[in-house]
Image 1: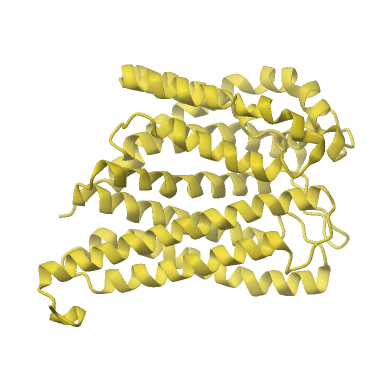
Image 2: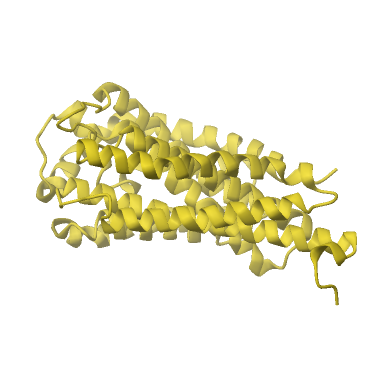
Length: 361
């Protein structure tokens, strides 16, 4: 039995290196998942005006995730470096992860300096923006790496569920970017960085529906149209978002049952695609999932539309009431554009999945 990697035959070395690359991609995605959970929790703490420092629990959660992602990127690089025949095939995944982890590592000391000089920071502060961009790139790199490995190695059906771990952080980190550009949580004593209300209205109305449909249909395509993937992905997103955005706010605790009903459209979409995965069915599902964005992103999306439509000063205890006061007007303005961008996501997810799953030369 060979003692060192260099003693392995080239074919065996490639298999070993690919598995190392896969494991690194898994750690990268898992780390970003932890970061997104901590980030959503951090937003809730900001909203509830809970005392915060650089060493607060949500921040600790985020930087543990960054450390895990860093280990994952190092392992990915090591595995890629030892590949003999597939360097080009996995390079796009590695390149994206390297850029992302660079931003994540830089965001840590940047955030510490920012807190030390300016205290409480806003959602769109430069350190947070650096962090969420790094999160998104790392999650994309991890997703591409996992998807490529599963495609070329004909893995057993159980391994395809790794795609849940691959796509979920992309969805969550993408949501973080959109939230930063649309929520009015960025003004502080030193800086006024809140986005313009009209700009925020359009960003939320178009980007959230696109992201929901894109993420769910991307995993459907990457998993070779496996039944259940859309429901599992949607359910886990709801679980994480609800646990970090709703549960910590006791005034919203009774609305958990309402929020859990959002699982129904994902299950319906899964059943439709199980019965018929034709182009028309995909378009219908894309429009359906895009149209429910206002419910999926309860409660915080209310703040975006309140800025443009009501302009009320909303305390955490009033979120529920203002949310339902707005719902009819918001749907009137947004449901058709949301359906349209949800349908556009069908074609974008198709194009990206084909590019990711293109086999080795």
